[in-house]
Image (tube, rainbow, N blue to C red):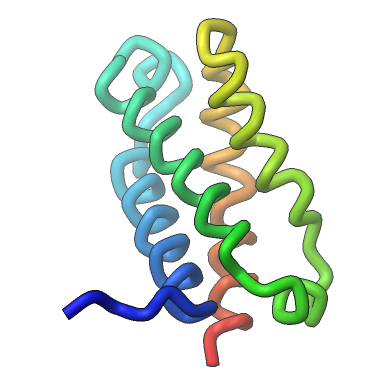
Length: 111
């Protein structure tokens, strides 16, 4: 049976993707990340998924909490439309520094 795609669905997907990224980057430094194509590619893919799923959350719910949602979609646009020029330092720092905060926001949005 197919699950209904509501706010809870999108939020759960985002949390799963964040947890995956944080788990594979645990204890990893920038040099290791940049030299490991499987790790960097899967992180980029999951960041794209996070951005895509954030667009499925209702505007009313997103507006109920202060967060820079433009940064989430902006990262997706950069990764998708300028893939050949991805700056893996930015990807790594975003994952390490911004995803824990985004996860906290997602938890607050869960019903």
